[in-house]
Image (cartoon, rainbow, N blue to C red):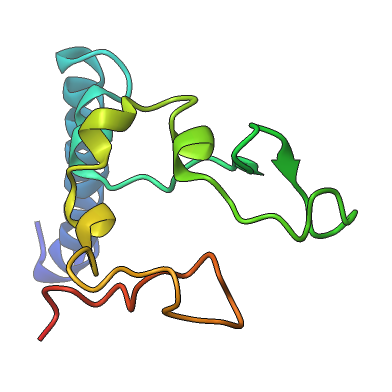
Length: 120
């Protein structure tokens, strides 16, 4: 074959190899594990939507005004789906635990600490 014909064939062969390789990788990964198993472990997911709830477990909806003046309750909000005793030992629940007091913020009485414990 002449050199000119190879110049046309080589880029097409390279493109075909890339396409076939991508298909083989896709097929192999689809057969290796049930759909989404590895992805669920490797990619952080956004938390699904949920309603904030007050201490009585009632929905707080500022758009409709329903219980809009009530403070949210982590126990009622998170405890519906999560083991509350376990998650309250986590870092975010413990932030500001050493400075918590009832008179911390008079304008927002539900804010009992600066929440910055461990930052500095």
